[in-house]
Length: 220
Image 1 (cartoon, one colour):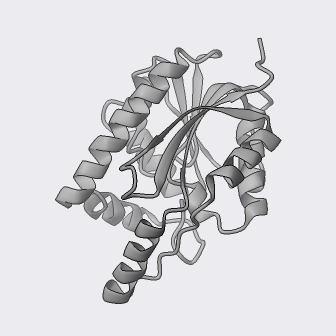
Image 2 (cartoon, helix red, strand yellow):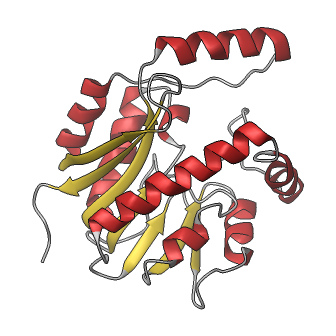
């Protein structure tokens, strides 16, 4: 992940982000709900084959422990070296985690089908150009042998108005891209995925949607 100026987070910014990001009651509720949904989607996918998971972008490792519950070896990847370093230090991490610094839009440094599952949460809504989203989806599909768990912000007028009001009050420069569900499915299909399950964070209230994707041609 990167800052709003599209540069990698520094170590100090990572520490500040981790300290404040999920501090409030509402954000703790979001984290709890996200974890519940993601645990169910990972369970539906079953044990990854091969037993490796790519977390891209990993951020500061908020879901490292959840991914380690699968028993698979986790590779934490991010555009920010400081984020990767923090993800590898998270409590409860697997005994042999690996980290890689990479820009998913430009390509991932792994062979085809290297991971039984790829995990990409809270990333697609930062990609404003559709060609960037397609490039990332294509790379996730390329390095996955079978499964992907991905989130995106599905077009939601209530949430959009809510964010406009929040920016007006807080003068925030954060911008997100909301994507029509049919557009997301088409981009996934184009990359070689099909949608198996889809779950909304808070149906009707929040735009974030979590999707379990499966390769249309599974590597064996």
